[in-house]
Image (cartoon, rainbow, N blue to C red):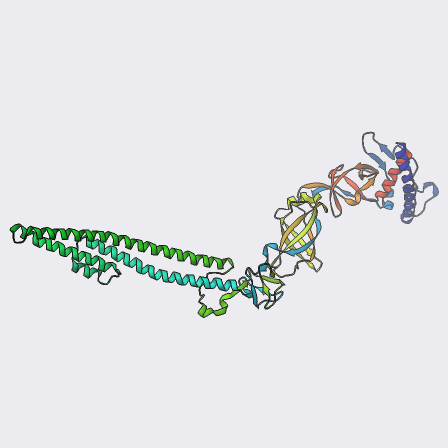
Length: 499
């Protein structure tokens, strides 16, 4: 206790002496005309206070008396404590960067020689626009293979149509034969229908059977009358049975052969279709579209069949160009960089102590200012507040996206990021000028009536310009000293010296 008082006496002695000198000078400048010495006011601070000048409650704050007649000289001013939302703004140094969701590093998927470069640096390009043309052996061979596969498929389709027609007509003829249609009826119905070799085989066997059956039917009655021998009738019957067996066997065999030929033809078509699809897929993997593969006749296209076009993936600007005419390129060489600058990212590092602020931002916009455009305020919307605290800087990365249709915000530009007040809860606020400090403790002087003031220890919170949040020690409606507190502090130290 003695050590503490000694420290206070050393500090207080200097402060009191200074305050007395300042108060005397100020008072001499502002005091009314001099009166007789017996009634003249004094501005010196007594080393000890009377019971009316100082009151110390054993369980409460220290009170001091400072006459109103001295307020003007000491420039004492006061404000009333209020509760309202703290208009708090946070500012960070940020940077404009490319919108990585609209950025494309372009490579050639094939090896080849650059045949044509159609763009220059900083040129605006449209989606699908050709940027570079590459002469590629890989593309040329792929196109020729596809052309050959399509040609084979075309031939197979023609043959398949003929095979399917033959099978259909043959099976229809077999049905009519089994129905024992007449030769004239069959000829009339099938004379113009394609059947290949099947027609001759079937009709020959059918005619032979009809002939043998007719011969047997003619001899059978005669053998009963004895006009012909029984042996001849038996031979005719045997011949008829043999011709019928041959016909039935042929009908089964031809029916099976026709169906099998039709099935094999269909499988061949599927095989060629698969081959064509694989050839097309190989080229589509390289970026070709159906329209690019529509006309690939080498007799018409010539060497352009080996051209590989590099196209723009979206509307944007060429921000990097690493390709020249006749240069050899491949999948390992980056040749262009395209960026959509109609929107940009705003990046800023936020200290971990301000993480609660980031958690409350939500979808609220933030403001962005640039020294290059001091009269303009840009809006950005936060989409990422970082998931990892950097160990070296103790910060998290804030990312926001801003519209940039006019191209004013340039990637790499430094900006100031302003996060507006997002906490609407009312809090007790005091002017920062009211705060005093002694031995690390913050306090204010509260006017409790007439000439009396009270030293009040306070707990502070957030700051906003010239206001500070008071978490404890003050309540709304109380008046605190905002100017002239030095004189009151001197009076306070004087009372401690008196103890």
